Length: 117
Image (cartoon, rainbow, N blue to C red):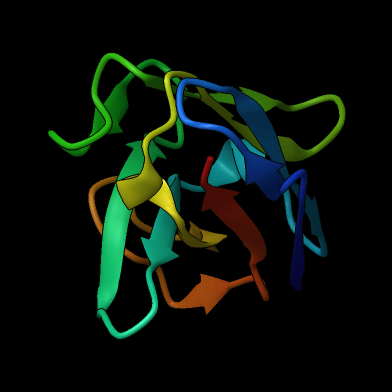
């Protein structure tokens, strides 16, 4: 079982990034999946999740309206489209398995997102 994130980088405030989480060893369609983040000096924060059936998406108040979670079952990949990025979105972002409104027990290594002018 493995989750590998990609797509992070440095972007100016107001910019956009699309994160990807490629899964192996299991099907993302069979599990609730989520994105979480951890900023320097802070604890983990749940960002967004999707139920295993794929019909419902959930967002933290801090990102609702700016971030969109999606899943491509044919590619076995989870995505997070991030728009209107703010400096406070700067963090290590990682995907997790098993929770739609929390941080699951299986997680990837993460991809760094830095929002700065």
